Length: 271
Image (cartoon, rainbow, N blue to C red; front, top):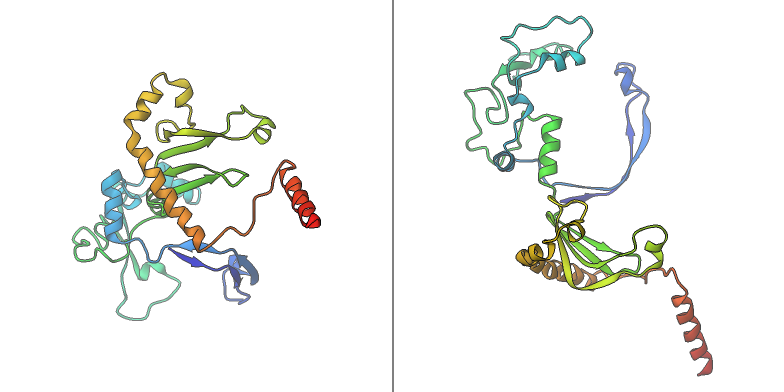
């Protein structure tokens, strides 16, 4: 992925020929963000569909009851022969056309979808690296959720101790806070575990199996392969501190750092 730095730009226009919702021009600041280096390709979308069985909007027959909610009241229902799965296909015109009539270069094609971008007689063979087309906003969101770029999450507590790790759907806990709640979670220290706990967040999203299941520890020993992934991921992450070392120690909720500073001060004065 690529990092796009934040900045300001002028959104909209003051041109009298513009649409009302485009006016007035105004300054907007956008924070920095990560973005994929290229559009989702046909090959990548194929993998997503094969793994999930997902059906796109263009492959789904329109539901008139849902469709009419987006139309002016009283709009007559189209003939059933028109209410079929399909999509709009861009069709270049042979000559200049009025720009206020989108139908001059867009045509409704039954059967057009990401597999058949120009209609039933077309396909994506040989275009595996091309951007996937004929996908809706819903399709894009579904694909993005299934294929997030980040696979690992590392958890630290307020003392900067590495207390947990998530890889895909596996959660590995190295230290745990055993206080049940209230201000105790800030007062009581974390407990270091000699053997990490593991959780399958797909089947146990609240991480309660070690409390509610009589067979949790037997299950954990049977899934020790997931536990073995932890040290490798953590070691790779900690190696980044050689290039980007921590700039300061974490703040303390007790007086230990104050006492430490006082002791260093007394030692300096006595020398």
